[in-house]
Image (cartoon, rainbow, N blue to C red; front, side, top):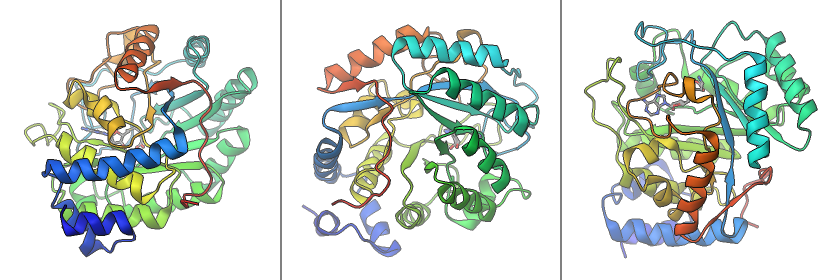
Length: 351
Ligand code: SAH
């Protein structure tokens, strides 16, 4: 086994320079297998063979931002915009609840129509109807005050990928009005407000180097998020990165193992993007240490419109089919879908 892998397994408290050396092994199947073995040991230690499920509701694709990689960015005039009504959102929850889901994730672009007042009303209503469910928000950058109001209304968790911890790279991916500093301010606010907080990044995004990924890992170690979302970058045809290569599945699963070892109890999804890049991508993610899947609960008529990247999977299927399909996939590798809230351990220490 390579020396650097051995050292990581002994003590993952790596510097940026050590992570750079570690990341150079991502192409080596033996290195991936060694990390996956330890990652799965930790995953099983804390979660057994259970894979938590989150019902994902993509409730609006309007967005005021213009992130260069994203298919629903404001500047994409070809995107057909939609937003769900409160009743449609509630009806997605009902379908999801009946299918057994006990976490709902409301994800969307940064859509000004959903003012804080409207969001608070939706959050309250969901929590009132489904008090036994966790509610996760993924609606971008807001003020401390807004996050506080959502939290007081009952939101439990918040997903906000940092996208990259490197300032220069951040500006390659985002227009000038957006800043890494604000992104990080948001993540700290969310933690301070007691949200189970998720950070993360794309793997193989344009301009990303191994040094960037090493900085992402150092940042994650410092932030100690309860959840980490990573998936391969996939080009979208209506963006300036249309011809950029997609991120690699091997590098993504390598990173999933690295992150599981770095933050042993973290909630770590095998993402839809990973499933899009490889028909067995989500299975590979679980076998590398991931422990969450996020099946789609959005209305079938809108699924294709929530197009962050090309060829997204599961856009034609009913919610019930997604559940059945994923249950089969997980069973095929010896795991079981779990239909409980699946809250985070509120610390990531390995004790
Ligand atoms: N607007 C919200 C949530 C929606 S985007 C927010 O900003 O947090 C959810 C995630 O999808 C983003 O954080 C990004 O990492 C990912 N994403 C966007 N475009 C992508 C692409 N082309 N390929 C892969 N992932 C992408």
